[in-house]
Length: 121
Length: 108
Image 1: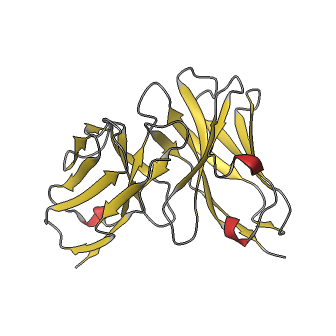
Image 2: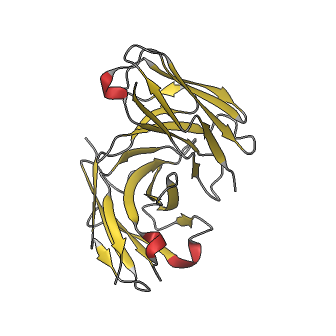
């Protein structure tokens, strides 16, 4: 059974870079047909897709966050990572990683449990 | 980008009730519409993909329909474990996948 688990600091200072890692177990991150994505829930809003990566390193990002986001993959560790620069309080929320089916319809399943990141000095 | 709206934003229902949630896209997305359930502290769960296809392992009381801009999600007979927040998501535009704001289903 495929499982995803987010990890990383729960507290980040304003203007610094948020870094999270998603570890995939029970399957290979190099499986064809799947991207691997990051999603968050801004306070008081619906879920927000941040960006996705293929095992070969191909990425695409939410245009509203693109200037601050970098997603990378490490196939040897079966992990992918998120970096979000110049964070503010508005970036405080729960961050999820998920597998994205890219063959069609682009659904996300399964998801990790999520990790809360607080931006505060 | 494609905006997604949901109605209602919340609803109260009793066990056994039929529950219907509507999702609307700001432009046509064909059948590129997926539905998720999220419970507090738990990972979101895919219920319906491609507007009407039931994800493996998901109970048949959940269903989805629609195409183009208007979509419906239905729970035919609400169960205690179904109290959660439900989100639609368009998978049409790779310029930005977007989710609806969610519909919270709680106990009446």
